Image (cartoon, rainbow, N blue to C red; front, side, top):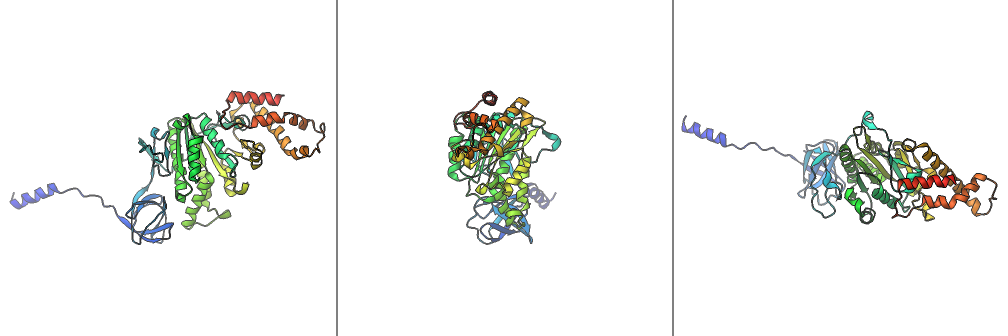
Length: 437
């Protein structure tokens, strides 16, 4: 071998392997909300970083050969031609036991100052709804510790239920009671679109005590990007799905579904989707069913019981989000401003609320007692003004007379102090004794 050939062989042996080239796109337009970039190799739903500060964004669509991106945080200081790096795939969700007792944001970053969350597994953000054949029936009751729910609107493991309420009617207190007292292995609380002060208050007051250790709290304040509201809700579902797949019973509390849909509406309108009824594009309304269908029980074991709040803007029960949520869930709990104004908490409007699985998770005696209570309560409410004006003569309606006689007991049963849990057996025994009187 000649000296030249030997030198060439040495050079070839020492040649470093080729490194992958990561191609960056360039920002062509930015209106403060949406970025348009060219030269970006990515897919819809793929993650991206924008500018030298590597601000988080996501590809939401394509238009005229350009990628459309929205920030996962408020984007700032984006100059023309700024680089955009795409990951080429959708985000994964870090899951595992390390999340228990922690507070994270919509991107999975810790918010509690306790250091990084060292999880041991990941799963897709989008998740997948259970197939009908893989979904278990709701047959076991869920004890919540709230007497009015356990006795009169019994929930079941794997049920999807909506809490329909306006502002200032005790929704957060009721959610806190359920989160602390419900018989569940894991609780996932997603606070989406709430004011920062309310999030802090909820975590420090409603989730105080032993319940914190079994709870994963995800917070997306009102000032965060609209897209992050949607991704925060999906992340909460993915975390709940992980624990369900481990055989656990998971209680998922999403507050509020309405603000998630509002975020999805902004994203859909930004990418050019036509607005539908009352300004909601079809994809935003479809998100309600998509999220609800990811909850439920699995035949292989484990279940997700989902409680999602829905805002009745101006107490408007005809809001399209309210209507859509009623259609895909297994029950609804309506909170009444009139009852809240009378200081009656939890302010559950029994005549407007329903649990569609109650007959499947309780016995006939329990169902009959609850129906009797609701009947007596409805008689009192329907005739309240008549009685207060003195226009009702006792004896005119024997059933109303019986209801009025039991009115103090009915009111005492329905109301409950915020710091006193009610046992399941205690609630059922008190109900049967009351309506049998």
